[in-house]
Length: 405
Image (cartoon, rainbow, N blue to C red; front, side, top):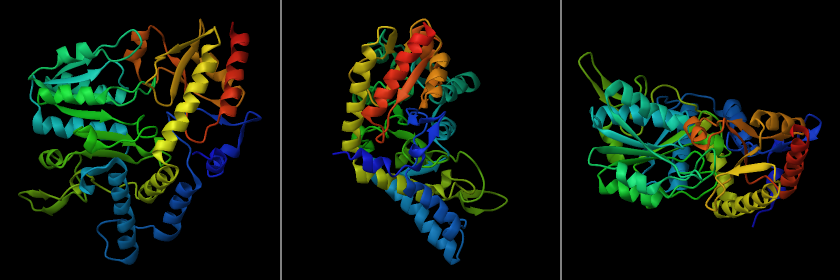
């Protein structure tokens, strides 16, 4: 059961006003706001624990190393990875995907091998594979979409072949909120011996994720979309893959020994974490996961589904509005336009009313071309949002309709 008033009290920014109106923050797909415990953890790091980690013998370094590694264990438990060393900390989802594209390709791919992505992917899960195609002669195949914007699963099955080495797919569409059928996607890929990378950036804030149950080889996400700090990303990868893959970057912290003749790499996950990381992000990550666990992911999913249904029903009654990806299996996102208008105009008018939404192509230009539009207005929800805020939003859309049409 969600006590939304108690939850909202933990987020200081929700008390501010924008353009003279109480803030209604519906841009959670871009980044979530942070509870006070996350903010406090960052302040505490710089006030009490500031030190570099892993290589110091003094007290501050030892204490902070423990805090940082405890964050890794917290992530491991949150997504049910088998080992903590299967969790590599990165800068974010984009960094995690680029790490895989660089290291996996060097270890496992050769010209003529095939990678499959989809037409709905965020550019971060499209451009690295496109680059491999152009630079290394890797073939990139694209799963087409249905009219509603869902994956064409029959077409996907036909794209798979013995040459398929990797399938890279979003768990949840960042533009439409559609939840992809991962069980079937992964099962079909495994029949052909392909590895699977899941972009979970838009899934982990809304759904319970169990990487062992999923069976994916790679799962990536960003903490800043999960009530945590920016600059902290997660790459889960199976132990045997990380062992076989070369380092992504080179520098301090990734070695056991260096001589002029050769270098011996450090054990996992340090082999992939060169240089000084976002140290304060460690305890902030742990604090964010503590918040999510305290509320309960099951409770969050049920409450956000209630918000999504309520908002979808209200928007559906405005005849001047067109909703995209309007199917049942969605998570946390509604994408729409006021007919015959540009999404930027709607977003600007809503901002004048204190309502924060995202407008544009949402880094999914192939998807927008498929839909035949330049972009959408995207409202995305978090556990601190309310039906009262949705009422304000719906009234704002109605006012925008009157002003634009």
